[in-house]
Image 1: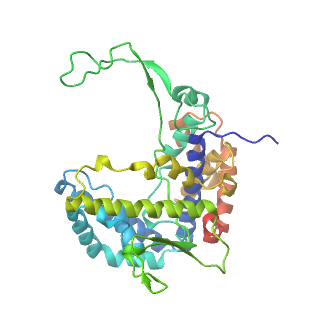
Image 2 (image 1 turned 90 degrees about the vertical axis):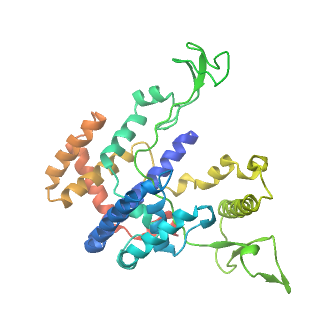
Image 3 (image 1 turned 180 degrees about the horizontal axis):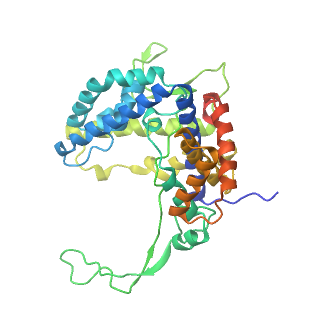
Length: 370
């Protein structure tokens, strides 16, 4: 059997959809198990969004992360890297937490099936019509031609030459940096229009920074050191997991040190920092698990049946019959994607497959929960 060759962009899209399909199934199982708690979560999310939007004029730049930060405080009790947040935003976040903490705590305590996910992701309602239109385009010949992509469903194309359509001139320069008609290299991308969830893994190991803890080894208190801690009586974490955990903790510790140096004036020019340890390419390779872990997004033919099935399931829950839901789903999804292969029969098949997934779902099924 010939193995499939994926581009880097293919792998990112594949992993995004794998995570997205899992959380969409988990959310629907949560709705079946305890619809009251599920509706409470959705109502709270809307109220928190509206509250932060009502305060957006208090900042020079939009406080986009406020809603996520609120859910993180509810779920984990604290923020990651709080020293990177401006004081005024932290104060506003404290106000939101005080105002909505009771309702948030009730959601966190009662809501089923969110184990393995961030509540900030679980509370978001996904626009499946937009998702289907995006998927249909990037996986079509028309989309690959537009993006200049080489993969099966890459959302980011390959660099290619184009003629500049307007002049670019820097302030004070006599000659333009780029003239009309000059050939330049560009890359076209089309990002996923919906939010892809993050994995929330069980903690197989910890990275401990000595400066933040009282760590004593052989009677000596450690300083300026980082330790990796995991249980020797349990299976060893993979080398991929170990490397990612160490790199992430190391970079976080460096950021904290640099922030303190900038605040104290001992570091006046952050551009002088050695950024070789923060290379994005090194980190992103570690973020993607092996494709063998994927259980839902297995091939190019996997995405559409799941998206259509989820949309049909929602319409059935809204009161339509299975045939009525399939008919409406086909009409709505075709209207944005122009998908000629989407039929009633395929929609019903997708619904049946998704229904089975939802009925059988348990958080222990998540590949990253094992």
